[in-house]
Length: 100
Image (cartoon, rainbow, N blue to C red):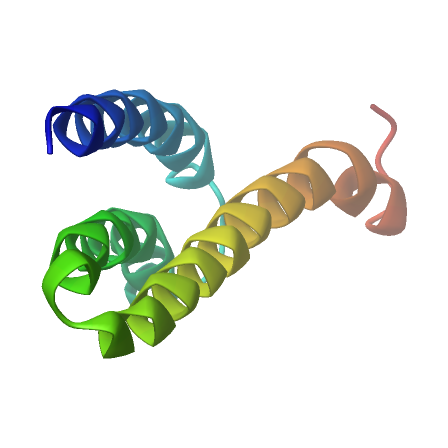
């Protein structure tokens, strides 16, 4: 139980910090405001879903599927934040005819 608490603590704080940094950069993109809001909030919800499910899985193994779903959502949201931000920083200007 202590090991799970330690691992949960480290993952929550470490990954939340990563999501904060990528979310701040992503918040400056030009995509629609509502979609941007969803993509910024989604990894924080997904990490609670993922790590919270670790604890529930100890008592009910069916929550292992929730761990997988949370991890997939986290990965997709983080990938969207990173790829959209990089595209707008480096490739969008080239496509619009502007030089970097």
